[in-house]
Image (cartoon, one colour):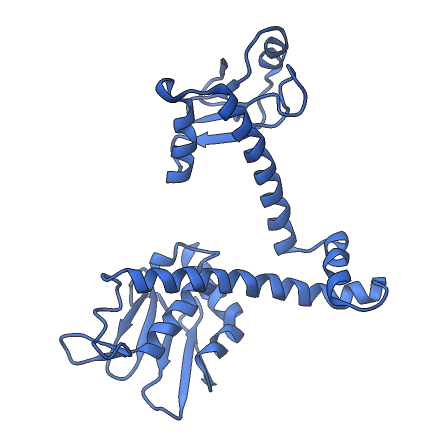
Length: 279
């Protein structure tokens, strides 16, 4: 393993590592690390034997990391070091990262090639330029819906398995939660909280989107702070349900809804206020 250390003030993205690249080709090393003390970039020769890849297969930021990255870093411990497994993982990580970056780009703005790829599966006929322009917003909406559904499924599992969820203890009937003040948090309010979390999940950690019930309405707040209201749910009437959505200036907009699923129609409003509070 070769290691090149740069000054802590240097940005690795701008750093020149010609020396590391040159040494890699004339030694028996299979791994190379470029670091400035804050970050470590890991390289191998997944593209061509004995030729260091131009892009790292793994990056580790010592000031910002998660459990998955720590687990990946543990591959390099002396007691568990296995070069063949690391090289195999390097190749997987490389293509996983590339695929992830590509899909993220398509989520933001699907390109013509991606639209045509999906369009051929859902449209009977030739995918002309006009057809592609018509399909593009539908495909983008479908991607957003797919992600929301996946997140909501995961959140639903978490809520079912977490007996200490912030919605209080669920009653024996399983359709409501009740606190010491006699306020009942209904299953519909709990489900609405899950939906707002699912919408906000791509912007903030879902744990920051809290629920706080009151007698006349149920509030969904950012960071459980009543100065950061996201919305208020007025679900006490079985026939007249509505939701008030706030903006960053605390202005209210009220919408009547017939079903909880209709909250997805106001995803842009939810995203706007959550983004504003997160800035």
